[in-house]
Image (cartoon, rainbow, N blue to C red; front, side, top):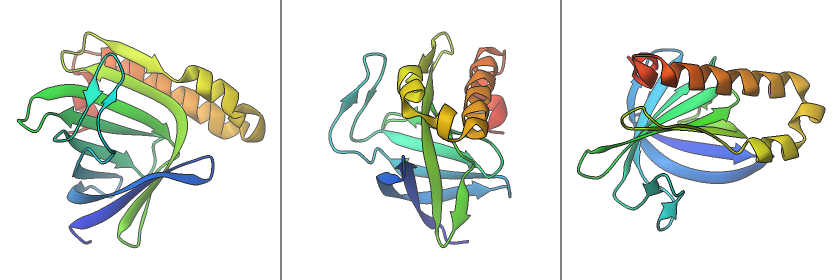
Length: 160
């Protein structure tokens, strides 16, 4: 496999963002890449700011309905983990393709803050009506991530 990959995140059938990333490892199920903050400018969520210089180590699974992104400053200070609930990743032709299913989870660096995000967007997406099996998997994935984040080893247990 190539050491450089293109990550493509889609949502509702359209490309949300596409960016280059460096391969960190591929276990056959989990593929991990590293990439700088790919969006323009700063994105301030209130509980965390993503900004130029930040580095994301992103973990995607071919069999799981989520992606876990470890976020660090350019100096290496851990900000926390941003988790996207997605369909399982497709890895092919030098790229990783993931479909965002709206649900997200933020876990602070110290593990004290675990925030479930965008549940309103998920409810409004219509996925529960158009693809009830995928909607059920998405909710299960968010619940599993939140439980893992609150466990003693936190999300790092997923990444070793």
